[in-house]
Amino acid sequence: MLVVLGIVEAITLQSSRLVLGATTTVFFILYGVGLAAVARGLSRASTWSRGPAVFAQLIQLLIAYSFWGGGTRGVAFALGVAAIAVLLAVFRKESTKALADNPERDHPVL
Image (cartoon, rainbow, N blue to C red; front, side, top):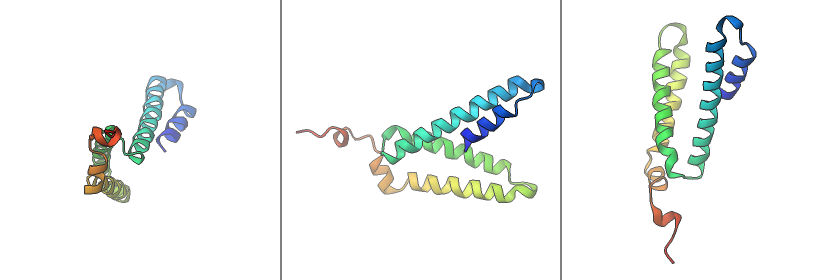
């Protein structure tokens, strides 16, 4: 979704805000690609992926908090619930065990 937002931002660039639009485009695309890499790492139980996943969800909780006023409470609620669900999944006992930095799991001793 973030990559799509980056592409839309690139398409709607205006000369009056060229630098802002270009940096926003690059940010959205890189953040989206980064989140896709983290999701792939989580699906493969790569130990490096837990930290970035937690960090991304904490950022999402802050974004949810920023949407809490006025007519955007539904957005805030959806973002918050999704972030909490991911955090709970990442910190489950099974997930913690699968994502633990255990060299024996990756390279068993023969």
